[in-house]
Length: 504
Ligand code: NAI
Ligand code: MG
Image (tube, rainbow, N blue to C red; front, side, top):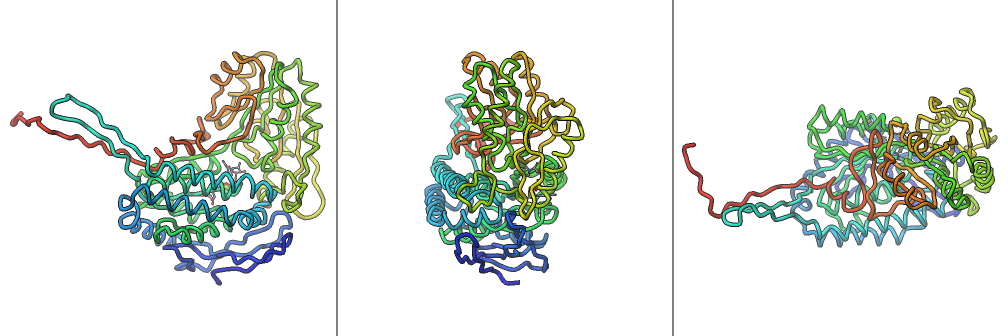
């Protein structure tokens, strides 16, 4: 097949040449042995945008070999932190230059509003690259005094090697940046496998990697189906680390493949069923805004989506009425329409999955306070849906839905709120709203989650670590903690006087 597709973006009439091959050694290439393709779909219209090459296991092998060669010759320990920093900053500048174009392609393939893709996702990704560019020449070890006379130790954080990175479809550019920036800052090389649902922007970013001047093989991109390319990367004997964001189910498979192959290092950012608590002293208007943002941002396709809301008894009726009124204000529509605050779900599969949950909520006896009706016409739209009268055994309360669906429960005491919040196998995000500072401190400490938002929700920062507890994952992204995911510590024991007595 052709290695690029010329498309016209219907809403803006912009003509774009999108690379559609595999990106290996800074070039777009066909598959070595497969003629399979992946269709990229516009979820607002259900129409095909273009097809990209679907990489095979053999293609993963070729990309891993390219990444290994670069690691041993032009990257890894062969390049200074200053140079890695310079190139990351250059890449950030190029993404910023192409912000509008990349935003349009992200909206076309993912469905999210253009103003969000362009102004939030891409601005944040540029900042992420610059943040880690800042670390590239500041990767420090320790010197450790042993006896002041004959021996000291020191540590060198070394790049871990070739990294497989498997990313999802909900934030294609953001997740690319969160993974690529720390890996390159530390001197690792990459084989990236974008989601088969949203492969286009990763290919456009790959082109910018070459333009920025990264040596061939430092970053390679293999579009592929998860069970083929993703599985091959996870099981590959010449891959030193795999970093993954996606479902808990797939995370488990990746960890198993790592264990059965070469015990590669694994970091997993998985799902959640994040609780959001509103106490009676909270600023109710602000709390309602954050609850809306918490569950509706990105049409609920967010790993920290605050999908379980618990409200204190004394304010329950007032708060839920306020919340329903505010949720109704959100416009869900085509991402290219400036009025849209939310777009369609990403795919038919996700649409069907979310509807399955809405139907289960109805049949298990939860009460619909809003939504729950299908729209007519094209596009994978799901209107915000709120369930009340929930019980802890319902599927909508226990399982990640990944759509604009909120379950609302109530509590009497702080203890009860904490116990409801923690009654989950997940531990990614949690939020609480209260004007009692002592309560905020007590509750934020008791919540079992990698991120707790106090009087706030769903806002992440590149300099603050992010990751999960319990079955929401292993490891941390962002912040200086992310550097630990891409380095391996070498301890050097240095003798300058100790004599070895022999025999023992
Ligand atoms: P998924 O976890 O299967 O897909 C995420 C990535 O994993 C994709 O790149 C996919 O190609 C890859 N993958 C799939 N199977 C693989 C395998 N056997 N080995 C290695 N890589 C593999 O997620 P999916 O099926 O698209 O969505 C299902 C649910 O997962 C969603 O409804 C949502 O609940 C959750 N999810 C969570 C995300 C998060 O940000 N934590 C992101 C995407 C999905
Ligand atoms: Mg899957």
